Image 1: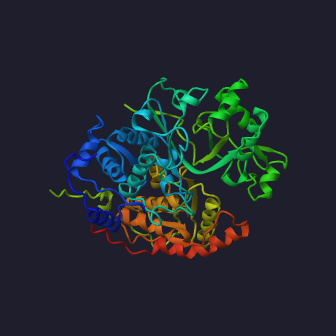
Image 2 (image 1 turned 90 degrees about the horizontal axis):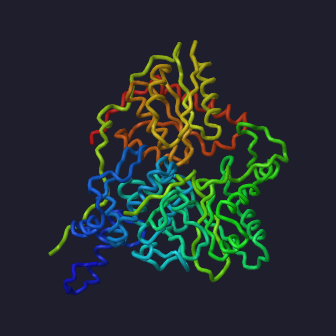
Image 3 (image 1 turned 30 degrees about the vertical axis):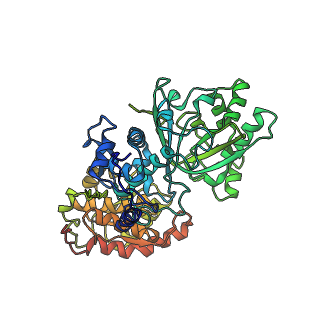
Length: 345
Length: 186
């Protein structure tokens, strides 16, 4: 991405710059690139938005962040200019997320933003939606969410063990960005479900606390896999309060299995929401009875559904990954995500 | 050519920092209306009730005014601030027992002090860092807050009453005795 002049690379200088960035406290524990007027201008050239436009706000801290400031952090995170419109759209999505606006970055849960990319921009900038979509090795997937993390750190000023109070933290907190594998999915994409036109590039985002694998390759019917998903969804561990907002990343094989059984995405959602839950007695046995809440006290056999209702905002379902093994992921959302997707120009 | 490296950190000037974060204190709580501003965190309202009951025993003819901030990590909504100004002479705020709500409780205390309402902010002792960080951010690095041992979410009724009794003297002193704080010089 540099200017193209042939220059001798000086590894010692590079290491010195990296150390300087560490010493200033500007990075997340990994080496970061230096932002310069020139590199920030290259980033800004990738968007039509005004560099001084406010693109992210934190009401409690009375802090607002401009497009230019996000560009600085995107450079430092290792983004290419063509990644920048996705970074900005991710901030649009996070600005609509009640948990992100309302203290989620400081939470003891230590959640990270799960950034989901739909549409042709995935191929254009190399967002991985297939094998290893959540894993390492793909620059767009790794640097786009890291740009968000550096913006939270540097622009909002939310740093670990200061304003940020994560109890244990979340693995890969600033590393969660996937494309939806639309080509291998039997269904409409997340952004289409959220109301955008098919073929439109779009970003959705939500704060995620953890991922739990549902590895089921031995199924003989779709209902077995659905029941396996329910078993993980209704696990009491993630429950805080009455409901446990949840999402699912289905691998293409599980998604096709459901589609071949005649189920649409909404059918899958309704099947799971109707069955996932615990009785008051089961919750009481793990110290999580809900009888203190409005509507209580509850009879021991009263059924508490894990998820409030079957909507996009309460149970997002995304198809991603490779078709090489039938394993899916259940993830836990902090608060309710917006249920909206945001276009990438 | 050597390019200059850009400092990515933001050093905002917080405009409200110019106003001192300390309201004038009454001589006693006698006859005053004491707001109890809960934040929906589990047991927070019960602890504030217990503190209120203790304050009512330490002063004559107080009125307890329980109120709730429904979004524990957000700034106080304007209408709630106006309601507190109208209906309370002093306000006890709490309980900050999480990363965002502890900082937010301190921010609310500072906001109310700046409109002339003496406050006592209660956080749990696990969240000294974000509470102090918020005080600094709001231009009042020495803003006092009271601490109660973490956690509070699983306290039984008698333990909640005990917390109220433990906190009451500190809250009382904070509401009537606190000398004015010096505004941040930054």
